[in-house]
Length: 363
Image (tube, rainbow, N blue to C red):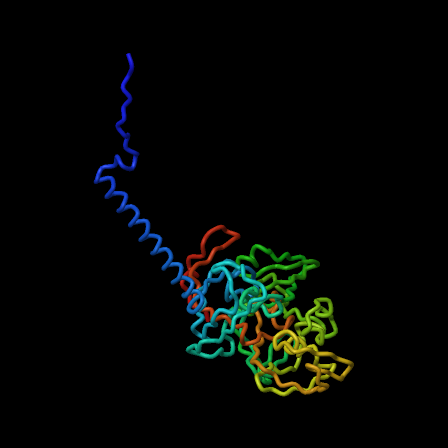
């Protein structure tokens, strides 16, 4: 007996859905589209805020201690000195950029100028990269355009006057204990210092001047004095930075003038180390030098007019900071913003947050 073929068309699975299920699908698609739109707008808002208003940065080294500690997370305001418009084509929130593409840019006016002793975030000048993707550094602006600076026995002088001393500045001190009495590194660490070396009753300790004065009252201490390198002790000659080649070490420098826009300088073999990066790296001139004779962009001349303002930056941990004393001046177009607030701080040694530092304003 033959079976009749069923010619009834079987409905596909989407055609078998009820009206209620179809309405649910439409609602789900609408919900997904709303969330996608929200994420896109949130990303756009974040890019705008990060580019023109604020940036978040982490302190990776002790170069600014005790003002800023390793593990501090900062909010930096770009509005203070004026945000820069984009300089390169790059992937947002990454270090990926398109090589060889430099955008015309300008700085939107900010609500203030850089003031002496501001804590400033900037792009590390001697990096080999477009300005905006260079490594971010944070230091204190101790020298303004036109200032005459010198460092004498570790102390900074600005226009002939001692610079302002902050209670959070740190230096290396040579500490001598009384005969046959050991100075406990744990006690020093608990007080806020860091013992770098010890031997024969002498210690090299990194600490604030306030702690140094306090330690002088400790019963086991014989004497405390700044650890100052001899004037003829050469530390810069081995570092390879153009700026520092004309100096012996960071405890004795200058005097020299922080360059400023419109300044006319007479180039010599003695001061070329001060201006070399400015002419060749930051202001992009072609320079040939034959002894004391210079040829700039094909013209034989020893006269040059500085095109930008520059700043001299130093870390607050003066003996543990590679800063302008080593690699020279920071051009104004490398400035990113002003450090504003610590929003979080993590103690990597104790593996716990430093609650007392959170939401502290930075001075």
